[in-house]
Amino acid sequence: MLQLQVIRQNPQEVIAALTKKHYAPAKEQIEKLLELDSARRTAQQELEAVLQEINKGSKEIGKLFAQGMKAEADALKEKTAQYKETNKELTAKVAEYDREMQTILYSIPNTPHASVPEGRTAEDNVVERQVGEIDHLPQDALPHWELASKYDIIDFELGNKITGAGFPVYKGKGARLQRALINFFLDRATAAGYLEIEPPLMINEASGYGTGQLPDKDAQMYHIGLDNYYMIPTAEVPVTNLYRDCLLQEKDIPVKNCAYSACFRREAGSYGKDVRGLNRLHQFDKVEIVRIEKPENSYAALEEMCKHVGGLLEELELTYRVLRLCGGDISFTSALTFDFEVFSAAQKRWLEVSSVSNFETYQANRLHLRYKNSEGKTVLLHTLNGSAIALPRVVAALLENHQTEQGIRIPKALVPYTGFEILN
Image 1 (cartoon, rainbow, N blue to C red):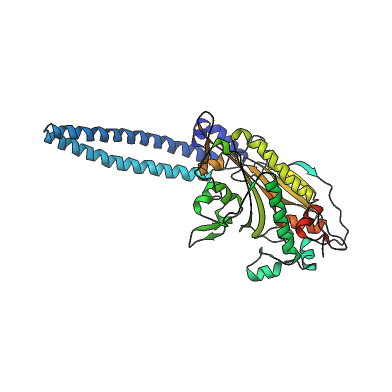
Image 2: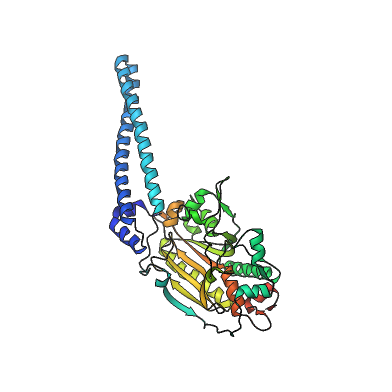
């Protein structure tokens, strides 16, 4: 969440930045927050004055009793008791102000980086670069859902029978391809210095708030009501929460973690070609990279993460492009995001396969994730994460773009993991 001190010092700048994200309640909420903050500070000052009177009275009562001045001591005792009642009232008032302010802060998105372009929708995102040429397939080329059926590697109907739409079943070489991609992505991440983590697939409420999925994405998450747990939407959430309430040592920064997990999202639900097959699922596999950096190093780290994701797509021999997301399309928690899209030759459209984001101090402030710098000052860290990579649309592009008369050609870098060069 945004730092209250920053909002106090630069309220108009914060409002202007949030306007770039097209966050309509920005002015109203910032003004309300500052009003509550002022009232809270007044109440806190009153509380501190009352506590001083209580401490002063408690010492004086003992002296009066020791001097045999019982009547004076009893009178002061009664006055101190009144102060204690006032103390309870003011303590409750301060706590209520804290709750109201926290609720507002949790509902305000991160402010975008200065380089985030203006815009409202995905149509306004800026294409930074394209790598590779767009494949042109024969007229009889098949989309991935037909290829999956032809080679009996993914069964969408069986998944629908077992669970529902958006939960495919991978079979035979389809399952082997999934496992191959996961191992390939993890091996490349560990070779790049990321420590592999195997996280839980469920999180508690505190973890959801820590990385900003709650309350913003509550409706998109699968909630287990009996235990008040949530199925993870991405490994970013449990991995980043490893460092909740941590004061890191400077020597331990940067932190570089990677993790494979299944991911669960309720957001899929519309119909048509854009969500057909593997294009959008409720459950999917993904390898995530997470970094914790000093503020001065985080944007160099973001660039390094983008190069890592691009390198994976190049090894998979997929044409891709990188988008700088505009203010209206960037996520609630992100300061700057680059999306990676692969070209699906049979569908003749771009498919998002990765988002790489810098959250600056937004998550760290929620997480109470800090370090002590060389001057002994406690400083909030920057958190970053990226999909490296989400499997479904990569599989869709691999099947479509690499289809031949003999079967699906497996990229050379992936063959040691699949054990076969052609999927047929």
